[in-house]
Image 1 (cartoon, rainbow, N blue to C red):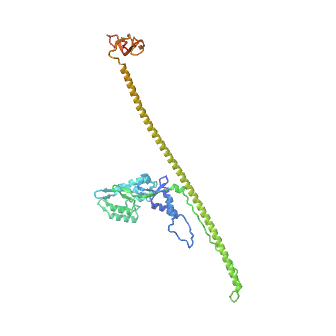
Image 2: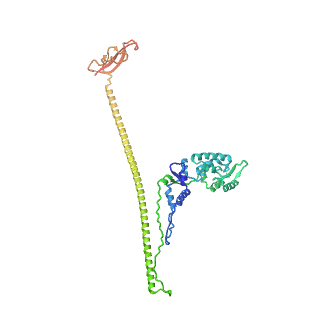
Image 3: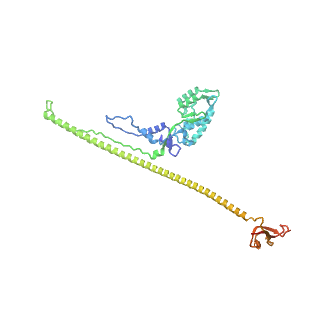
Length: 434
């Protein structure tokens, strides 16, 4: 099964397995492990002991995901023993092969529609799988199994399909009609993980386990400890005194035999004690070695977790510092905005006050109606085609020191000629006495 997982087209190493497939993978690994167990007569099994297969399942799985959350690309990483009945392919097939009538709440199906649906799904299978021959022969009998089983067309499958077909309505043109209950019975009997949502067929909700074949192959290590006990028979030589012809041992002979037997027992007990001590030392050594390895692995794991926690704390600290700087920047922006608004208001007040002062001064400069004013003119001079090159030839000022100028105006001349034909200009000045 591991070879099948590794040979899937997805190159990222991640595979999604159902609980039953994950258990089968663990059982295959366990079945390749040969172990011997020696227990004493006083040993009692504990009912809460965890099996090796269960431990492997926890090691292999890196999390679960609901099948309803999978995208079309993620479905390509799902391992399915019979790829053509993988839920995403099979729902695609059913949605194309079956026609639903809301009025009668029944599904209809004919060979021509089924053939087109099968060709479409076959095209998708060719895109998703490099091994196009593994499913083509199995799928040729029809996904639904009407006239052939979904897994290939064995005699039992054909018999079962014929029985299913007899329970459904078939018209003269060979079109099959079935109710929703009949269809659900058909799907459940074949353990097809799809269901009718009311509008379309969708995959059922399944908990899929994540298994990374790359990590399983290159990073995982399974360590075993093995203790071999070799039983060696011991032969002790006992010297015995031969009895007399009467068939009885003398008192001295009996005592000597007893001493030899006791001596043999003592030697045997010493040998057993030494053997037990050696076995205990070997077991303790193996246990200590295993504990050291486990301790080292735990320390490495704790170190890795600590590094991850430190990195996470650093990221959180950077995020907090960034949030503080952002708040400070926002506060500075608000303060600057308030300062600008205040400055703008003060500037408007100053401008308004200055304008009021200028208007007051201008009103003070207006000549009274009783002022003595006279009009003066500068001499006509050339204007040089509209330029101001000759303006310095005009002395624009009041002739008397006690007078002040109230208005002036540039005039074309001389009088009586068209302004378009003249090339002369002068200034008209109005001066009043103070």
